[in-house]
Every structure is written in structure tokens, then in C-alpha cells.
Length: 215
Image (cartoon, rainbow, N blue to C red):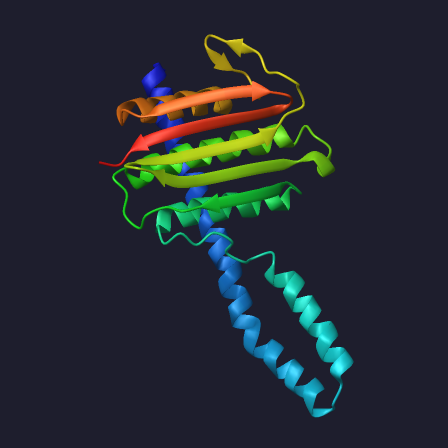
């Protein structure tokens, strides 16, 4: 199989995975909303009996449950919100702390599938790198914002190595077919849109910065 066919196949698998994650996240949210009426009825029953302690306990339970389905990023750009929230949910399920700050216009020149592939690959690589760390050290920092007419994307995560090695001009942060093809796919998309990508590994932290023109 040619290199281009491998990348195309990997991209298709990646997109299918992303949409499955998004679908699962919203399925959980719909289920919680469906149960909301029952939760209200329970609290009304406690209120009728004047049982404030039980109401407080029940609200604490609901708050903890809600944290597992809450949409944490709301930029207004549907694709960005969907991929970021699905990946943040996935990272948190693996006990990875995520610090995210995203400011993305409702409309972007970068096609949705391309942006999905970039953000999805960045997140997947960061999650995989974090899994080699003890839970208390796991962290991913995401920042997205406009810089003039360019969309700026920055991902930082801790790694098990103090400084990662480069092979063939690329950092090797993880093992496996998906990682290599993921890096190639990011570089391919950035190049296609006349963008810029920079990767840096220092003091156990790995950072990827990307600029995508939106004109």
C-alpha cells in the first residue's frame, strides 16, 4: 500500500473515531437530561418532608455526575467544540488534567475535517504520552486563538523523557503506526494551507505550535 493510501486510510479511521467519541458524549448528555425529571421529583419529595440534609446530599451527587458530561469548551464553532470536548472527556477518563482555553471564530477558512484531524491527532499523541506518567503528573495544556488573520493552536504535555529525540526531522514521542501517520497528516494539512508548525521538547514538556491562515 502506498504512503498516500496509508495516510488516507488512517485519516478515515481517525475521523470515524472522532465522530464516535462525539456521538457517545452527546448520548451521555441526553441520558442525563432524560433523568432530570426524576431527579427533580426526588428532591421535591425531600423538600416536602423538610429534609434539607438529604437535598444537599443529593445535589452533591448530581454535581459529581454532571462533571462527567459537562461541555467545558463553548467557542461557538461547532466542529472545534465537538472535537475539543470529546477529547477532553477522553483525557479526563484517563485521569489526565486538561487546561484548555479556546477562542475560535464561528466561521473558519480551514475546512472542518482538516481542523478535526489536526486537533484530534495532537490530542491523541498528548494522551498517549501522558499514559506513561504517574497520574499526579499527567497534564495537557491547550490554547487556541486568533493572531491577526491566523488561527493559533498550541498543545503542551509532559513526557516521560526530559528531552525527546528526533528521527528523520520528527520527534518520536510515542510508538506505533498511528503516531507516525498522525504527525505526517498534521504536517501535510499545515503545508496545504500555507501554515506553520513548530515542535519543541524541553525539560520533560513537549509543545506543538501551529499557525493556519484564515484569509
